[in-house]
Length: 116
Ligand code: AMP
Image (tube, rainbow, N blue to C red):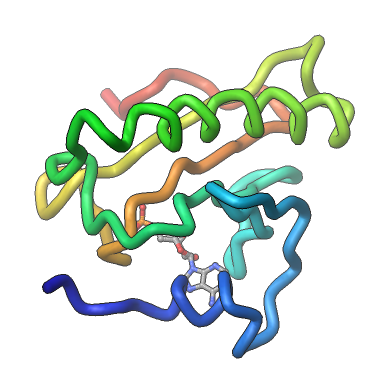
């Protein structure tokens, strides 16, 4: 059994967050420490700790992350200029919250993917 994180409380609206989208499979909310003019986290409602823990049955949920990312990018007015989707995984990926999440960054040129 995986341990819940603060993100489960955000999904259940037990703590405040700036939720921009929610449906039966995913929730999206603004990052509390934004790294770009648009910085939204899109997460499965089901607790999947990391991308290394996904199973075949998660495919509809994982696909939903991408379709919701596209919709939010359109809502935010960043779709035509482009944006970046990132999923950090475990220690070397610098994942801090152990509830799988897709970062959506946009609103300015984001530079190269990795430093160096
Ligand atoms: P990661 O390093 O990929 O695990 O990213 C975790 C992200 O969650 C960071 O960008 C944090 O700023 C963000 N974060 C942590 N707590 C909250 C919160 N309560 N509401 C919104 N974003 C959060």
